[in-house]
Image 1: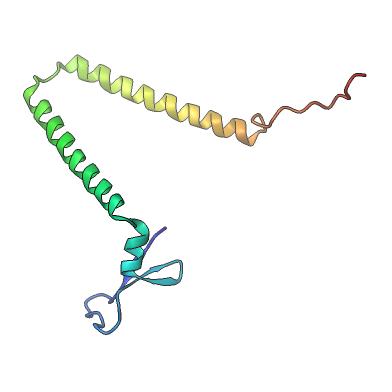
Image 2: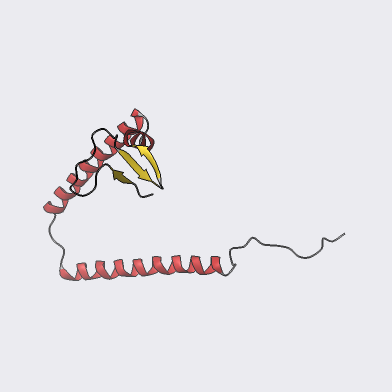
Length: 118
């Protein structure tokens, strides 16, 4: 869902008497209520903060390891690039096959049209 903060337009200052609202699907909701809907409890805020800190630590570690390792030879970069392209092509092909089989009815549940034996 796309949400737009409606408080002012362009270079015009926002009206200080009107509370800031978020317009989502033609319904105006106060900004604080929209934020509470997005992340409701303190536990969720704690989880978001913890995950952001963990992401920062992992990013720092990856950058330090990347800078300390020696560079690969050219042929290894070529092999890695070709394998990445082949993996993307295989993934796109499998997704296309999934859509093709679903649209042509191959994913329908099996049905038995025969009458049962007595």
